Image 1 (spheres, rainbow, N blue to C red):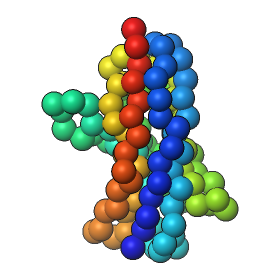
Image 2 (image 1 turned 135 degrees about the vertical axis):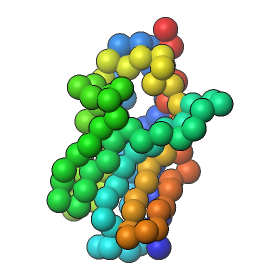
Image 3 (image 1 turned 45 degrees about the vertical axis):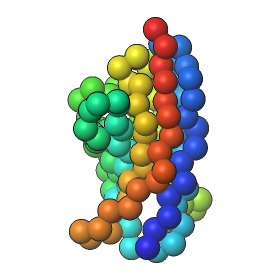
Image 4 (image 1 turned 90 degrees about the vertical axis):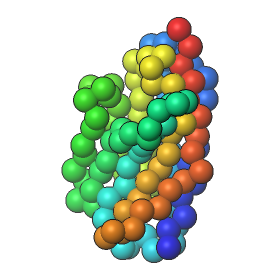
Length: 115
């Protein structure tokens, strides 16, 4: 079992920045990858960025060059640094952890980008 707690969401103007944090607890050593997903109203949840245990990141095309995912293994925390935010980035952002075929989710944090 893994517990995930997100923080750092909020309201920001277009062009601004935010940093999301996700603190993991529980079976940390078994985690294969951690990532961020987002879900806008009326839309499906989509992958934003993922980082493997080895530290290799992957990004959705829509956020490449603007978002950076990183992890602090000492603090068991994953971060999502977001810059040049756009109104279309508005969504609830969820932290995700994968252990083999199992997935764990945080409660979500709202990010709202005003134009």
